[in-house]
Length: 288
Image (tube, rainbow, N blue to C red; front, side, top):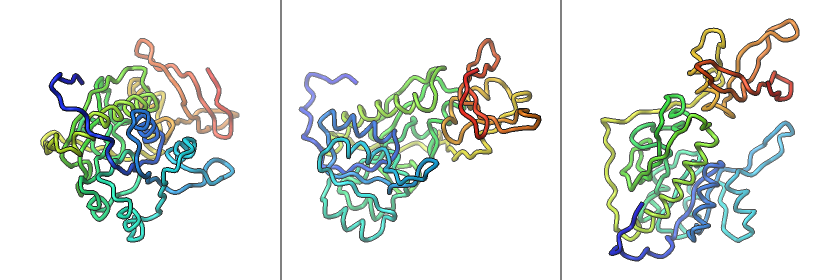
């Protein structure tokens, strides 16, 4: 976004707490710190068992903070209870920044901050509110999506907007590649708008309910495809949108019986689906 010659100098680094958990949030946090906007504390989900050995593993945001080697406090509450609220109050931050945190944040938490919590949502709100905006945009065949900053209220992705920016959704984009692009765009938007919001230079604008749409959480059942009956374009979009989670699968004859087969990668060539990588249950991924 272009800046005019008469624009005021950017305010100093906002005193903020960052809320986030997965890779999407870690990319945003990394970009903010690289731009000289480091949080005074980070809130993320607790460590969870991961992998076949169920080893206790920190979430990506915590891993990134640890790798920095600095002393940024990392809070990992299981519940956003009174003890956590008291700890958060003691930090004395002006504002919270939330990107894919993974927990419902009660009013008692966002009321702690004089400027509330600024939320990153990877869609052009009010379109694609809810838990799966990135996947839903791919499934719908959008060629344009984006990311929005809004101030949290008690409704889902409903609060007034600070700013947004568009991102091209290419045919080659998967969930992972699009999430990375949207994370980088979100960080740039925060660098642009967060200091101005703190300084009172931006007034949040209410969202229009007329254009609001909502997304759903996807389950393994949503990942099932019938390669004989389903539309090739629809299957191709599912492969791009729902990998790695919840994953795309079908049933194929193998060793004389139907087995579950994951579709890890596929192309659409002249209207036909071409499988590139598959994996049978219990087996290793294999290129085709």
